[in-house]
Structures are given as C-alpha cells and as structure tokens.
Image (cartoon, rainbow, N blue to C red):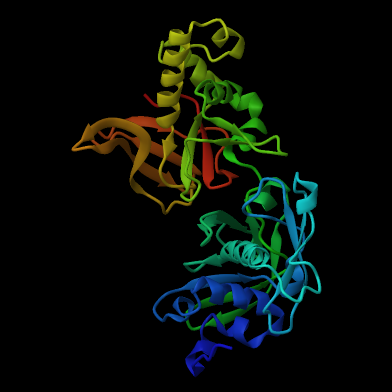
Length: 365
C-alpha cells in the first residue's frame, strides 16, 4: 500500500483514494506513475471516473476486434481478471489470467495491466473541461473526447455509436474536478482506413490512392486495415481529399488514375512510378499532430512530405493552422506567403484510432 500525505486527499486524487469503487482506476493511475503529478498545485486536471463495475465490454485499445471486461479481482488488487471476447484466434478468448490461478503467468498479468492502464488514460484530461461549451478535449491517451450539453461526454467510439456518458455528480478539488460518470468513455473503434471506408461515398478515390501506394496492411480477423505509413504511438491529422479533389489531382497530372483495374495494366516501371506518386500525394495530406476544430490548437505543423534533406535530416513541408471554433473549421496556410492552401469542408472531426480526419475539397499541392 502506498502512503499519501493529507494534501493528497484534497487534490483530484482524493476521490480515487477515498472511494473503494474506484480501486481499479486508482491502481492503474499508480501503475502509470501519474498519481503524484495529479496532486500538483497550480494545474487544472479533469478526471472522468470509471468505477470497478463499469469495466464492461470495452474495446481493447490495442486491438481491432477484442472486447474486454473485468470479471473479478483479488481484494488487494494483486490480480485483476479480464475476460476477452472477439479475438479472431478462438483460444485467445478467455479470462486473463484464468480464474482461481494460484500462479498467474506474468504475460497474462502484464496484458491486463497494460490494457487497464490504456483504458484509464482515456478518462483523464490535463486541463479544465467546460461542460457547457460543446468542444473537443484531448485525453492523456492521445484520443479526443467531445463534451456537450452540460453533462454529456463521448469518446470516438461513443460518437460512432451515437451515444455518450453522462455526468452523475462532481467533486471539486483544489486542482481540478472529478466527475462520477454513468459509463466509461469509448475510444475510436476504427483505424483510419476503416473510418474512410465507412464514408466511402466521399473518400472512395482516396482509398484507391492508399491502396495504390502499397501502404495498406491487413489486420487478421478484421475488415479494417492499417496504413503502414503511420506510427500509431503518435497522433496525426489527415486532411482527406474527397472524390472531387482526387479527381482534380488526376486531371492535373499529379497522380495517375488509382483505379485498380487500370493499375493492373501498367508495366512494372510504370507501376513503381505510380506507387511513388501516390505515396507522395498521401504524405502531403497527413500532419504530424492530431488537431480538432477546438479553436485552441494553432501554430505551425509539419506534414509527412519531405521537401528536402539537410545534413541527413528530413525537412518536412510545414503549414500554419488557423482554428475557428465558431465555424468548426481549420484553415491551412503557407508559412512563407500566408496564402491559403486548403480549408476543411464537409466531414470534420472524424475520430479514428490516433488520427483525426477532416474532409477537404481540394488537394494539397
């Protein structure tokens, strides 16, 4: 047991320390080593509490298919038992570690710890949250939460399922507010490819570009796919050109037609050239930080497109981001000329795993 000083109980950690219904969340916060930081004065934190009996049927943050539920735990929390369903490998659908284990395997315990820690990180925001201002806030997980209506909070998966968690009560601490919630906050359920595919009437040509670039990877047991270009330890923004924008890029000769049937007729050299052009096109549309239309995130950000190499170091294209909360829009500008490069249009703030997607109706040159 960890010993805390008296001032810990007046901090936002107080609710976790004093209410045994939050013992699993408390253990995760301790395992992550963030309990001391959450007691800091001079900073505002927000915690959306997840009680022991609310760890039910949550999408595994590190899987495309699995769901997890806490089914039991030892009184001292030395072992928490996590049931897994939905894994494409049938033998993996079981309780980790098996109930009643006298000597649970370290791999089972480590999996449970990592999974619970990832879930809890999605419940903590490193700033004050205004429940009365419909807006996006980034959780410690790196994913975004949407707060609306004075009491509703939704993760990307909640938004996809047209649902939200409701604030039941609040505890005002010296360094933030702890909210007792009706349920957990679900992370985005789809990777970027899947999110685009769910909106294929808008992005079918860009999906063809991704496939044509040869950077799409299959996920066992899932119809979703990974984009091999992205390191999902980081977060990203995709300014996704819609079908009109991609058609214009084809017409302008920037990329060839990505129709798979047409690509199948190319010579090996022509196909290699097409893949290169598709890849460069894709790189221009990813920014190396996730950005929503929260009206707060502004500045200069790098894309994935390398425009030069200086002293063996990649120099990426950069854009100034203007973020308009009132119109729920982003504007990209050239940092040298301040000319507008593109603006968001249509679908905006589409939350996928580690990537925020915004539609644009012209392509980035």
